[in-house]
Length: 331
Figure 1 (cartoon, rainbow, N blue to C red):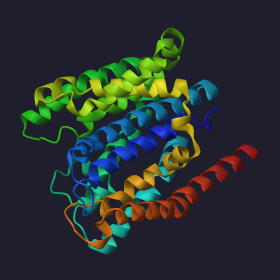
Figure 2: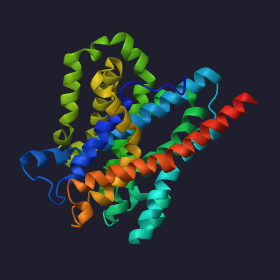
Figure 3: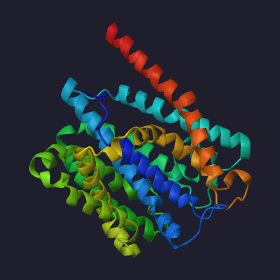
Figure 4: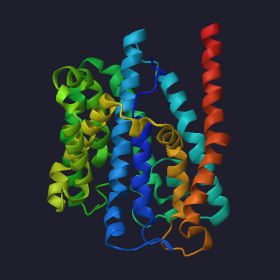
């Protein structure tokens, strides 16, 4: 069923936002600085990649289920749900930051184009580059899926092949943020889409992927991603390899349904992950030594703002959407 939650995904979201936190905490006031915490700081971008793969997998899975159930893709329904899921919390955050600190780059923030804004963007809005990547994916992928459904797998493979070309072109024209531009990181999202396409095949023909040893190996490979492609040329050519490793790790985690990823704490933190992602930025700021950026108060303030955002903004809009759907069905 479309509304059914997939095992382990909320736990994986919790791990992802934890990786982002570890990267952004390093250098903040009173946070321990040693070789170990410096090593952990490398995982911020891996956390974002995991989010990308999960997004591609989840959205494609929902689209596949809708196609199987109804024989069509209701694009209006899809965009309405995505709008109510993403826009209210993001616009609320951006507006609060605008009122409090009057940053620049607001047009980029409100139009989900922050991934093209460059490194001069303000810290409080800078993390929205990854949200802009996801929103551009949400805009384009359902159209391609709905109107070229018989060629969906070929499109997925083509995106994996074109993304390295996009990275090369950006780099050639001295546009060096190739780990942020949507066309250059589209293979991270598409790796999740391909997982959705081939998940049943992997489950039936590659049961070894759920075994503990293989799961731990895939986890170790995922943890090695920050050091996997040390040279820019390797990143340009093989940047789609880490998302494929993450996709296999996610598949293994879903198949295993381990308690660690499915307990109450991981589930709740997974629900809050979007709000945590939005609100961690002003508090986990290593360049602004204020009382609210001091560890561990900065973590507590992040969680507090995320809880408020989830229960006051996110959840009411999603509840409103579900009620409208129930009324439509009842009618």
